[in-house]
Length: 176
Ligand code: AMP
Image (cartoon, rainbow, N blue to C red; front, side, top):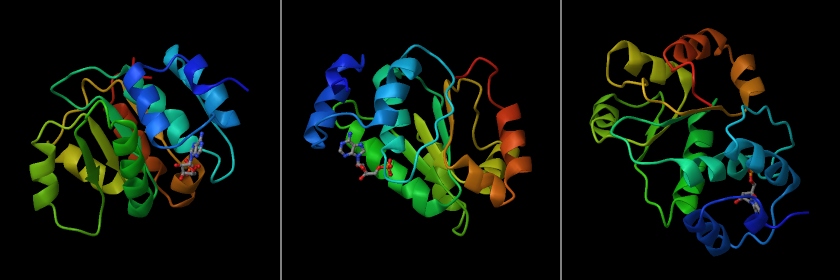
């Protein structure tokens, strides 16, 4: 099994991984991270608890640069999952601070609209509410570089396919 240092991650991300107490990559991390850093599109399947969140987050945090528009969109089936990914993203971004914004249903729009005006780098969202914001013109995905469909089987089981398709249509063709 390779070490984290063998995978090609940036210095700040390696330091954040050490700070998080991770000693070695899990199998899905060892397989996915080098491919993601090479710009490949990836489909990953592994059980809950095997480190998929870090498998997609570490290469994204490692390679994202400054921008005035969102670069990363992670779609999640539930707000609880979106909040968990937010926690991990903030851990991995400890030495490379990013503006991460959480968007989900079941709450008012006001705070979310204000958050979207703060020029987020990363948006973690459930599909329905994200689409509402897109349709209202509250955010612009024209410079998106990375799109993640997390727990996609669950998202499709929950009937989010039409929303997910409409969101993908608004993302640039060249995104990873
Ligand atoms: P996940 O499968 O992404 O939900 O991750 C499950 C848990 O494992 C989370 O608490 C992560 O912080 C932790 N984790 C992920 N990757 C590693 C690793 N390489 N070493 C130790 N813990 C990890």
